[in-house]
Length: 426
Ligand code: AMP
Ligand code: GLY
Image 1 (cartoon, rainbow, N blue to C red):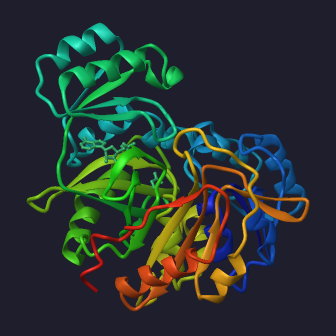
Image 2: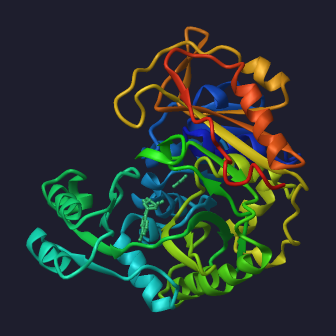
């Protein structure tokens, strides 16, 4: 089978890499891909935009692509799956109506309320004046969220009502474009965050290993929010008993309610959770795709062939698949970014040391890289991630950092404390 992967991040490199480990996968085509997917044996890049649905569909039909796996939320929210279905293609990724679980926070909140899924209390507003009037009846800290997709920048956890008001005003002033024409004011949850990525065929839903991300740019979880600076799995915070509750209280009600609404959701349902100090799971947000960098720690631990799993979802045969098989170790991933990220940064710096890092038994997943005149150069904010697998977190984290130390590019930045939560346990 030939598989087409849509996207160009570390997540898509990890998807292509894992798919190619299956004996049934003959070739992976990545659209548009990055420097890592360009050089991965068995994989090649196709230089089309992720929203060029016609181009992707035509290529898939002509080249006999058996499965299309959509990585990012933007094409899903724009209806790529609906378009490709109309062409008779097999797709892993929800349709546009299902992708609203990520593309509209009010839609997702309504679904959670209908399904009885534990989440923060929230109210939605279409004008700054109504939002501000409501805000002044609340107490800080409080969370302000733009309704639509804002590339991870639409959330403000405000320590004071003044800060919250400023966030409301800037959303309605157009900071996030149309995504901020509606704003949610949400109760601030406390606890520890975890990412549970589950795969579903619209009827059956199976969680993957739980992971933890590191969203802030700085050590000690300080500074601006990013797409994610590192991850580890399986997250010990999510014990087997807690995972069972997440399955029963979050994942199954979500998929059952989608189904009741006539939505045939086939893809990833990613639950971003807050585990409260009392040990209860509450949903912070749902995403309609694999997490990045969570995928770079979850997939390397998966034994079950990925093509088989994704195909079972796309063809609504997940119930027939045997239980997922996992490797026994743990994985950690450290992300290297271009200096300045998540603010302004430069591109085009040559990258060295990747082979040495691989020789140190790490897996290097490229994100913002490309090949320019036969040289690998930086091409984005998050440049690459180094994943290592070991028997315990101490080993995996040390190995990932050792390999990262062999990689160099101008302005390279990475956090030095990935996995600080689990360093003292195994
Ligand atoms: P989101 O884009 O919804 O993932 O939000 C980004 C980050 O904001 C989350 O990872 C949390 O750290 C934080 N956050 C979002 N909603 C809440 C909430 N209701 N309470 C506390 N923190 C939140
Ligand atoms: N790492 C967070 C996300 O993928 O949304």
